[in-house]
Length: 265
Ligand code: SAH
Image (cartoon, rainbow, N blue to C red; front, side, top):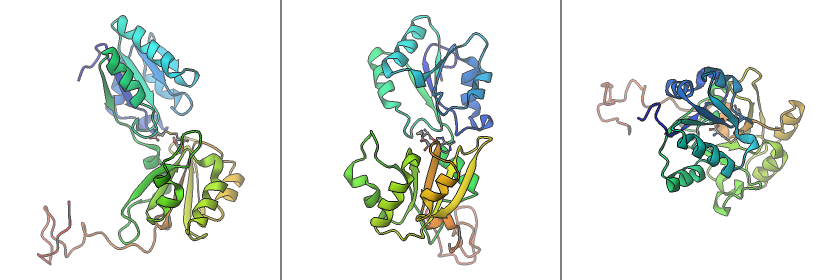
């Protein structure tokens, strides 16, 4: 990796708590000449890891061209830039458009992953998304807003799978979300959870039903920076024990009592 030389490092800041950034991400912040961070969601305390002479910019006040122009200026001076994104950059991070311009400009970049907020939310709820016998898939999605969601990925279409669903960017319209899911055929008592500011000091979480989602969020004062999780898995009951730790099962590492029982890796 090109530590310290002039290039751009896209870094996942993690969901909030400052000790949930990766060791690599922290090192890149410590070495950065310039940091552009998403101030609407990245914990500003992460910037305490930066050098005193580091140039720091909040991207919530900037458009794409302005972000690129800061990076370009840094490159011309032989400096390295950290572009700090909330959670993991690959999830609603608007990183591709930045990367494409950097490629056009011949500016080198790499990516350091982060703990996404949907993992932070599961930790807050002490929840396993993929419970055997309940759901083996997690659908990461959002309701449409200014950014359109393709029809085939509509709330209605995705809910037909009965998988665990995690809704990003949808908390301001929880009422509409639960209405659409119920109209699409989900039972009004489908278990739901809301996690506000997962892993931050002021984290809040609620478990409710699909029907009471909007009321639960209203009474909890939650309108943004929250994830909504929908599906039977939220109840965390009624599941089957795993095959991996089943005494009968043979795995690559362990001989079980039934030699023919094997599960995929
Ligand atoms: N890349 C980020 C997501 C950015 S989109 C990630 O991997 O987590 C912004 C949305 O993420 C917010 O509207 C909210 O739905 C969710 N979000 C981000 N941080 C959160 C947190 N700490 N707790 C709950 N939701 C969060």
